[in-house]
Image 1 (cartoon, rainbow, N blue to C red):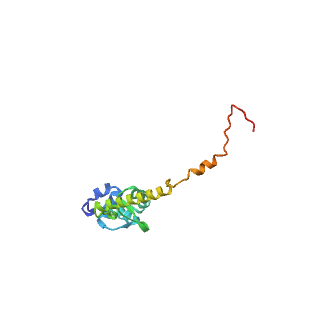
Image 2 (cartoon, rainbow, N blue to C red):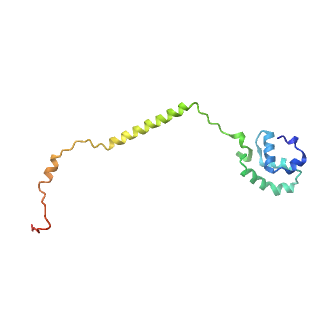
Length: 145
């Protein structure tokens, strides 16, 4: 939508955020919020007093409208001009990453298994020597020692 193609009546009934969208789209670059709203005021023949009255409302509109993004130093632009692109070379690369992760997980499990190795040889003969001095006491037959 080009602003020049709109009639004064159409501009007068447009919302601030729709006008801001049209202004930023037509200009093609970021702008400060005050400059955007001054342009809107000029298009809708608003006074300086109306500018001061509605600038806070305009800021709230831009802040809550997902079409706009606030940039550094008070500049605003259309969000569509600042999208990030994620490209995958191929699905094979993703599969390779998953396989590498599985291999690393398996290596960790094997290392943990080594920590709890119960295959150590134990000498059962030593335990018999410990029991040779053992005395069993029967509770039913009180034996005094």
